[in-house]
Amino acid sequence: MLRGRRRSRVRVRARPPGVGGLFAAAAAKLRGVEIFFTSLLVIVGLVTAWFAVYVVYRLYADQR
Image (cartoon, rainbow, N blue to C red):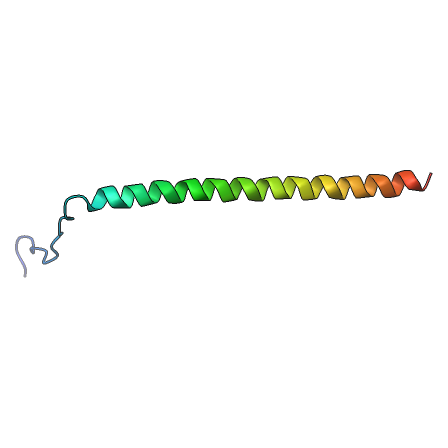
């Protein structure tokens, strides 16, 4: 029977100084790009929906 706790052999290595800053700056830049393209996608979706409603309206109005 084992008594006590086994020691873990996994070692956690510390990051070199300054590396965290680089990753944080890159993450912030990517976040801005993500927001830009998500906004662009929403705008294109709204314009497409507006155009579809407009076309249906014009088709209906021309039949009168």
